[in-house]
Length: 137
Image (cartoon, rainbow, N blue to C red; front, side):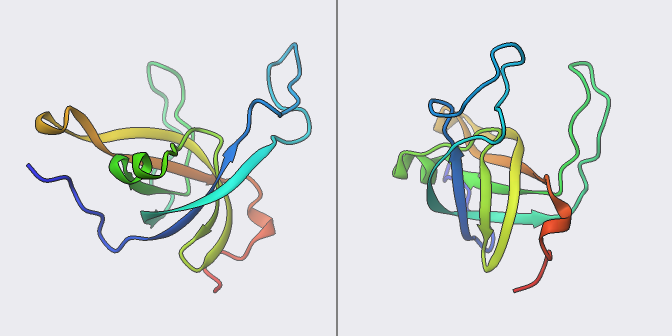
């Protein structure tokens, strides 16, 4: 079976969180001030804006609300030697400058001949909604 394709893929610029150089509070194990960031990389992704993922109570705890998601192919991520994790930042979605952060990552498209997930959905949330003009080019 073929690997799934993205529908209308656009360039997504990602900044990875650099946990090795981030100053962390010893008691709370969270970044002090702000997290250090690695250099950016760009990859093709399928973006969907919309707050369709609300805060939902679940067995494992409440799920965080998101402002949208980006679909990536694992094949494309492996080709450039990168990965997407919670806390990473999307600085550009196509032509739109953004400042949104990954709040959840879900593997999807599990196909037997591909030995597991072929695509991932990275949900993002704007931590500072007043700072940007969403949709402006």
